[in-house]
Each structure stands twice: as C-alpha cells, then as structure tokens.
Length: 232
Ligand SMILES: NC(=O)c1ccc[n+]([C@@H]2O[C@H](COP(=O)([O-])OP(=O)(O)OC[C@H]3O[C@@H](n4cnc5c(N)ncnc54)[C@H](OP(=O)(O)O)[C@@H]3O)[C@@H](O)[C@H]2O)c1
Image 1 (spheres, rainbow, N blue to C red):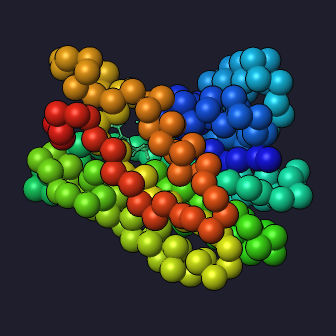
Image 2 (cartoon, helix red, strand yellow):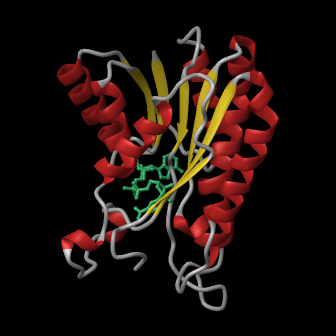
C-alpha cells in the first residue's frame, strides 16, 4: 500500500506521514525544502522499514505540481491514497493584507491540490480504486478575524473537494475533506497561548487514518476537528 502526502516535511503532513509509515505504507513526499525532506525521508525509512520517494517541488507552480505527479506515476504502478496537505497561511484582512496574498494562497492552497490531483486521477480511475484526502480548515466554512484571503482559499479548496466527491463516487474513489481548527505548527510559533488551547498534529493524523481505515463501501465526506474549548 502507498500514499502521496504533500507538505510532509513538518507539521500536520509530517504527523500523517509517520502515521501511515507506522501502518506499513510506502510514502511519496514533497515540500519545497530538499534538506528537510531528506532528513524526514531518511528517518522514516530507518524507523519503519518502508520505501520513501521524495521530490522538492513548489506546488504553487502548475508545472511543478504536474512534475511531482508524474514523478510518482513513473515509479508506482498504482496509488492507494493521495493527501493534499501542503498549504500556507498569510494573515490579514481584505482591507489591509499584503498585495498578492490572495494569488499566493490560491496558488499554494488550491491550484497545488487541483493540478496534482488532475495529474494522478487517470491512474486512480484506471484502477477503479483510491482515496483523496484534502486538508481544508475551519476557515473553509467560517470567516474569522485576520482570516482574509486564507479563508477564501480554504473555502475554494473545500469546493474543489466537494466537486471531486460528486465526480468520483461512481468510480469507487473516496474523497474526504478534513477541517481542523488550530493545530500546533510553525504558523503558531511565538503565539502566547496555553498548550492545550491548540491541538497536536498527531491528533489530526489519527483522524486522517480513521477516515481512511473504513470498509470499502463507506466514506467520510467531511470532518471538523476543534480544540475542546473551541476556535481561537
Ligand atoms: N496549523 C493549523 O492550525 C491548521 C489548521 C487548519 C488547516 N491547516 C492546514 O493544514 C495544512 C498543513 O499545515 P501545517 O500547519 O502543518 O503547516 P506547516 O507546519 O507550515 O507545514 C506546511 C508544509 O507544506 C509545505 N509547503 C508549503 N507550501 C508549499 C508549496 N508551495 N509546495 C510544496 N510544499 C509546500 C511545507 O514545506 P516547505 O515550506 O519546505 O515547502 C511544509 O512541509 C495546510 O494546508 C494548512 O492550511 C492548518
């Protein structure tokens, strides 16, 4: 069994990579930093005795998202799971956010998933099997202060995920949208909050695994995960 995970060098993507590695999956990973990917890939190979392929790509660029898809297709006969996790957060409000914030986040948070999925979809359809998991956000369904264009991009990603779900339900391919609230990662570095106010990435990884680990005739369409005390 195998899984493609984007943005797997840290944060939620890394936690998901460890979870699937623990279950014996081979991994195809990407991020922009080759140095971080190399460290992660070597650790996972050593610790879990699995195969890991990886490539440094900037998924916000259409040609690099397609290249990464082809890189995997050239090495794997079949693909079991695709997890579109890579994404960036640039805070602000529409009235004051930096110029280009909308474009940057639409490219990194939406086009990345769109073009990678589009590249590997023919293989999933040919095999009549697969599971695509898209890392959306609470910001995919509610607007919040300082959410700005991040929220716009995550609403769009949820829209993409829902369209895919409808298109693929008769093709035996599952589509799941994950909507986490605040989860510890670099985006929260320096924020002065009690540790238990923000979720651990490992908990998001457990939910992702649970969504995957179900009978063939069952799909989790979307799932919301929040800190017990609610949104920040
Ligand atoms: N943390 C939260 O509170 C939270 C809540 C809801 C949803 N999410 C979503 O969860 C996902 C993961 O977030 P995280 O908090 O784990 O962030 P993170 O710790 O910053 O990790 C993001 C990962 O994506 C990679 N990445 C970013 N832009 C990329 C690009 N253009 N091409 C390829 N790789 C790229 C990063 O590596 P490089 O920088 O080396 O490229 C890194 O591996 C994101 O989609 C985020 O929007 C996060």
